[in-house]
Length: 507
Image (cartoon, rainbow, N blue to C red; front, side, top):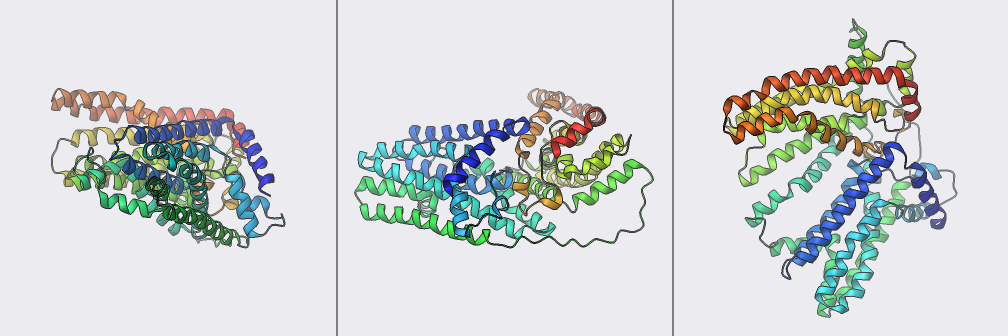
């Protein structure tokens, strides 16, 4: 079965590299190769007393990436259990076959490239350790893939309600933020970034599965072949346990979901825009994908601004509201995609395109503006000083207005095919395949759109000119209003003229 599923996966990948998926895959390849290059560079450039610690940290990062990445990056496995529902296979056979198919892709390839740092480390220690490195490298890659699929399947079992979708976003937001702000923890523990990894941290990392290849290589260099055999057996055993757990998770009946309607009385919208706004607010409270990614943005930003408190840095706190809106734009820029083929209802009502776009914009502002303002006020009070206040107040109206325009612009110009809500699984990360490209585009676009205000703020800070820094506030307010209207106007025009094509891409 492995020999059958691998070619199937290859053909699926080859035929799906079009449009947004091709751009997303390309960005993934570039990011993966950059990560692999950094791993190799850290291993080669580190001194003899720091190479082992650097390798332990990078291998732990790859393990974390394989666990978190498929959940937050929207990784699409290509082949799913549902595709093979009518094939006479046992759960164990299905798990082995899907594991083999999972070896085909960008992730395993770049992980294998990054894993060659183990060979470099073995060459640095002793030639006798090189065969051990060649043995543990493929086992380590297999273990990462198996653990990743077990985590995704486990989350899919429990992620079947709005509360669980929100709760599951909490650990992922914290873990992903640690990848960006991990330097804070290292600085807090070691006292500086150039200090070697403390021994007690290295010992803990060696106990994790990500550290076992390093342990095996170091044991081979010392001639401790019993420990080498134990580590290899441990890797094989973990792979077997992961496959067994995956097989258990694959064994579940596929039953239709029972949906109980809610009683909705009273409020009747006065205009079409108000109707769309109300519909969108209700959708935001029900759609698992939207709930998951919005809560992820909030948790990520809170972790991002609170973590520097470990080293007594409070400068990030007043910017919490700006950061939240910025990330919320990227995580929410799939409005029409998450609705799926429901777009046909809008297309069958001539002239409703304007109400659809403007209603979505206003609903999003009602959703993110209150917490953004609250985060800004609380952060400014906590920070105490007024040095960051012009930045927070000056950028917040811009990111709100530009964000409300950008998210509908991206939604109609960069559609991503997503299963209709009634056909989705229980994993918003897998259901939201391809959203990572939207996130990166939105982040870069917001930086470009904020350039005039940023120029005033940076110049005022460099010249120590308080008036110049506060001048960014009216500029940001004007830009925010203009971008809200202008980008929304472009989205309305696009939806009016190319609505059927957009529906075809979403279907």
